[in-house]
Amino acid sequence: MWIGWIEFDILLGDVHSLKEKRAFVRPLVAELKRRFEVSAAEVGDHGQYRRVRLGAGLVAADRRHLVEVLDAVERFVAARPELELLSARRRDLHSED
Image 1: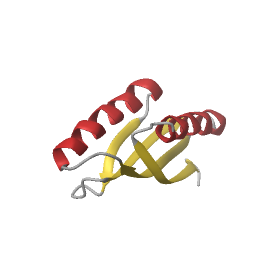
Image 2: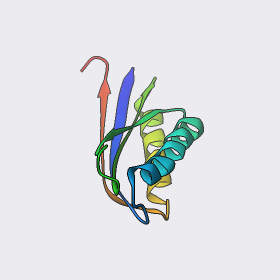
Image 3: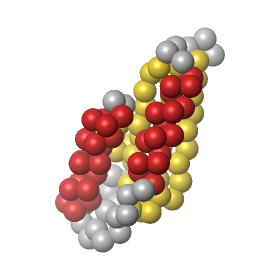
């Protein structure tokens, strides 16, 4: 069994309040869950309205599938025009590690 996750550090564009940030983050998290069947959540920078830390994770039977899904998630987030992806960090582990 393989376990993998990716964490994004994101800078939002035209956002001026935490309410506007939530209006952006909630649909993005929901779309990641729906489209890629991953667990996703805002995992940091909760009090900053222009910064977002998002995490997505999944469990897969083989590493190839895990890498394909995490690559697709990263491409999806990076392609969003309303944000600037500052960094993406990922990790994968085998259950016997």
